[in-house]
Image 1 (cartoon, rainbow, N blue to C red):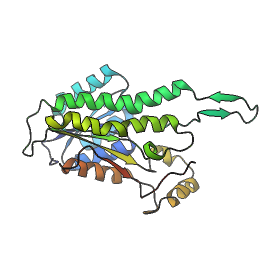
Image 2: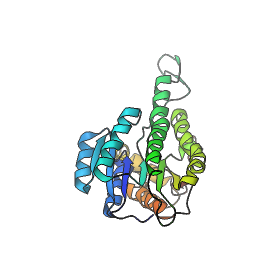
Image 3: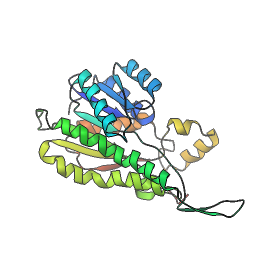
Image 4: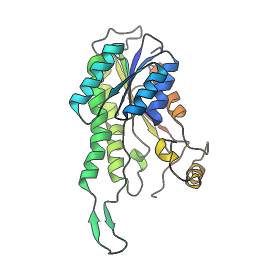
Length: 260
């Protein structure tokens, strides 16, 4: 798919981090971008900066997602590209002990369920509504109608201690990629998933520099944190290359996560 002013895109989590980097990279190619996010101030600012539109969207709610697509399509027409970056990171052991009392506690199921609702259900909710719109479009010269990119994590394959909920949610995104690609193949809609490693995000920026340096040193090459620009570069290539479909690609500098 050629990226230019004839294409519109939806980016969830586009107000910051990997989503913002992708939204900016798309806009630089002339693509009309709609940002789905709950951070209104940041989202509005990014949208204004790139000439896009901001839609206040909660990916855990059907009506909110539908309203977001209605607003985005009213502004830019039916999107041909959708990238899902919205997500949350959580950490808790399956069983933990309080240091002071030795009290044993099982994983908080409300936290587990919320992690899956946002990262897995939210991703599927958005992509399914986007795909339903894409299949109404005329096919392009190569027979394609649209492209979907999801964001999982290397934790989907080598989750660390305390990442049961997060790894489960991202593992679901990883596992559903091929079945969805098969579902949509006859419709001319492709889907791929990116598995980022240790990335520089707003959450990472709040950590002490020594911690950031230690994390970077763990990465074989290049020995630095991944950036939103690294993610965006891969996302754009996945849009352009029509032969990449149903694939899950690690973006991690060859790191494999240790247990902790």
